[in-house]
Length: 517
Image: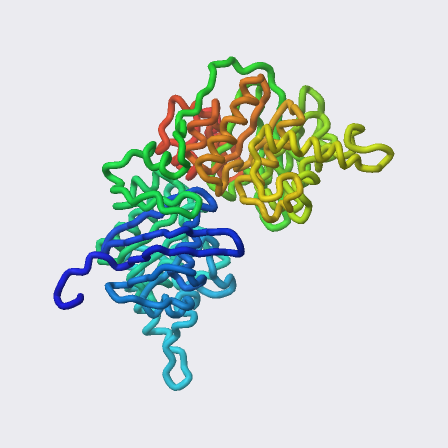
């Protein structure tokens, strides 16, 4: 406290400009956080949120502007300087050592040593007191490799508290959590603020900002758009500030009657080397023309393996798959693709794209062997280029060098648009879309949802796998919930609440037809 006067701001970042080469990542941005508030930092991917926080945390130096912490001008040259100013950060991708216990992970780098002996007891006491005080409920002796992602996050939070941080930065902290874990995290954030901590919450999820933040600063394309009180600003207003145009949150779908079954999955069993139980256990369902069927579940309940089995990425142990009435259980991936199965994979880097290829090469990965793109084994590059140009225009794919852009240098949203464009343009009978909007901002998400609905309205079948509850509820016509490798519910999104869906996903509820005898 300076001279007994109350200091309103714990962080003042004034007129920050950050340039990379000839790209202005931040252009004259001002950001002020009050003591004891949750301050959200909102913007699309690439708006500059992480860059701004990296400047605050000392990972980057700004070309212009100044930073005032607790009323004093400071120079933050590296993360150690930030830690000494009691600024802590939970990164999007956790930085934990897998073969360490929870306790070892928290005290790493801040060990108290007496005559060369690690004083673990004092540390343990401090960690357990913090865990108790902020209701974090951790087991100090569990290994990092054995705990859930939600728990890992709590360890990261404890790490910050252990080092006495007063300013806590959370970078997209909910991306990997279940609805129930997100609820817990929100409670923890409120608890921390009650204790006088100040939180910066980086996010592009409006529901969460509404739930937990006091104020919100919005960035767009590296520029400061404004700071608003969350209570008095609607989601629609915030999203418009974020993307510069109105966003329609209500997904418009015509009423159409689902037709015959395109894909039939019968008594599917998939085992994996590492698990004693079947990862997919006797799963049967069908996807019909003109419907979006969503498989919802918490990550790690067999949904990924189920899709890998259907597409041919991993072998199936029992059961069969029929596609348009034909048995395709043993068909190759390419054959399934030619038959009319499109796949927007979960891991776009691993299964969707070749990152060191450029955009035009990636646009024909599924079709390069067709006569229009090759002659006697030689690729017709002009045809490939024209085709890529058409996709860029039609699907609004933005990248620095258009069709010649190396895919690695494109943003996540545009990489995803490229996959969606390549898969849908083949006019498939069924689209398997696995977490198609993971990590994407609101504009790209809206776009992909629209594309899936267009497929459905054209009478195609869509099988969507999603962890995002809003997406499950808004986009699907029918929901199958998967829990520990089994289908536990067949639900109508119009007839259930998000809470109910959460119960099915957590395994505490089953539909009658899936009750175990």
